[in-house]
Image 1 (tube, rainbow, N blue to C red):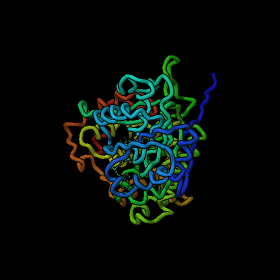
Image 2 (image 1 turned 60 degrees about the horizontal axis):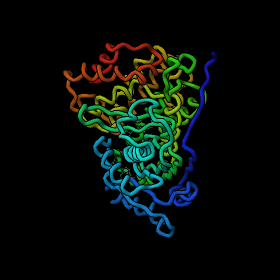
Image 3 (image 1 turned 180 degrees about the horizontal axis):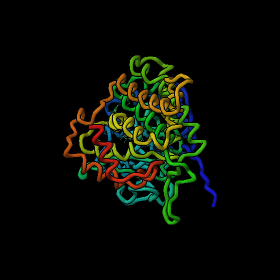
Image 4 (image 1 turned 90 degrees about the horizontal axis):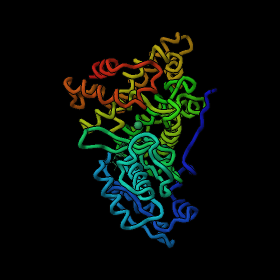
Length: 401
Ligand SMILES: NC(=O)c1ccc[n+]([C@@H]2O[C@H](COP(=O)([O-])OP(=O)(O)OC[C@H]3O[C@@H](n4cnc5c(N)ncnc54)[C@H](O)[C@@H]3O)[C@@H](O)[C@H]2O)c1
Ligand SMILES: [Zn+2]
């Protein structure tokens, strides 16, 4: 059977400065009158919660807010939020924040509609039907959760990130307003920005769609590298190279914020259709153990994984160098590929992402356990264009220590 691929996004994607002002109109279109809003204290203090909700005061919408969102949310926080949301009985869920709050919103919308507990839905394609309508308003430029099919939580008992993936998890509406990201502190800009780059690069280096085989009885949201994924990934990579240093160094620079917001959404469209791979698999045990941000862990690991993939993806790495504008046309493909990896290392250094796992407090004794956990995430391991054994993962961790 010839290989086929499809492409999915949020139901509606509304992008641009001021897009968040359309929240009431979009809720109206969904026929939703009781909105459960998920945000956090930082966003309340930055005035973002007030700003987004103010126009709703003129309408008949009833809104209740959960402001206890947290970075890399735990299963316990998600369960507490579900309990409170159930008591309110919303007809739509609004996620306002970085990927952490957007993911919480998706999980709440899921469990309220489908019943049971969130643990019933962890894994790939285990969601049996639609969630409550969800509206996503990202306030970081990074995760692409506003268009993606994933939601990620932290399993604090087992020290690992866990996720649920399903086409049903793509929000009904994504309101991507770059102005909401202007108040991000530099570390949040850096960490989330390099996560967007990681999404785009992992999608761009993934196994080809034609070679990505899954047994007929297995369902998966990822499909491997395909032309539309490449298109979004390429643009996202170029936008990150152009705008992330400025967004980091000049937080008030609106053009840079807008460039990064677009990069993050395009990265989300690329990875959530194509797939992410070794970097994400390897970040999950690291983040679960040392509680670094998802973006910092990914950014640290990204160049090490790019080097591991160089023999399988030289042409794509050379293309990355061009997209990041770091090579001259005279370079050989191998030199250009190395320049692409170095460009990521230089960007990482410029925005203060740690370069070694030991900088995060990881010790060599932890690495075999990390390799075991990362290698067990088969849905991510099989996205690698180069065959991988557990020792390879350990070698990459050791190089990164
Ligand atoms: N669902 C997906 O497709 C997907 C993809 C990648 C990552 N993730 C997950 O997303 C989470 C990371 O999300 P993130 O990188 O966006 O960071 P985050 O949501 O964890 O936010 C980081 C911190 O920044 C603060 N913050 C966010 N926006 C702000 C603003 N505009 N002004 C001031 N402070 C602000 C938050 O309050 C928080 O303390 C992780 O749990 C990760 O696993 C999900
Ligand atoms: Zn990510």
